[in-house]
Length: 276
Image (cartoon, rainbow, N blue to C red):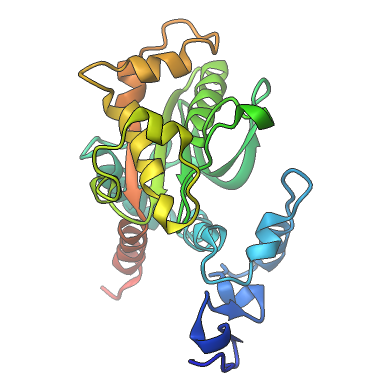
């Protein structure tokens, strides 16, 4: 509704500006039957002493709300629907690379923390007997940058790769990384065509205007520079793993959009529930 008017479910700011604010966090999430308490536990998690998820749980701009709404449903639908959805998600993210069986049947978790030497919360993980997948979900804001002054030695993509590779190596598993964002990689790169490494390193843009930053760093590590994957090799060189090959790591990095994700899940649910 416009001009800040209220509806039964929530409201917008003055003159209709800002995200829609739901009165109840439950209205902002798709909740599988019997999962209300699990949702409450999820949004009450704290990180760095701050309950970020709880703070944003009523906002229609919340990427955590979208993440929960899609992946918690995917974790609880029937096995056939989940396998169909994950197979399509994999094809979309990895350009027709066939999904390993461990991904199709693996356990889906939201907001789990991984890591010892370096620790990080993973938006979504899928873990099977021989595979570990990290999904990093972004919506209207870019990834966080490295900030040496604050002790952040690595940007968000680097941190996820380093933690995931270590965790997978400990368990003898193959590691995959999926960046989930609002638009295709090339679309976000076009927001800042020809951006230099210097610009990307020192960029501090927040909000939608900075979304090119995520695409820049992902492309740099996935595809390298001037035909070389040395930027990615540098990121993983000191994590203490034998035989880590930058080419293999890059091959297991995928990009996925929210639109494709939701369509894949909805198609799978329809195909497995419609009358025969």
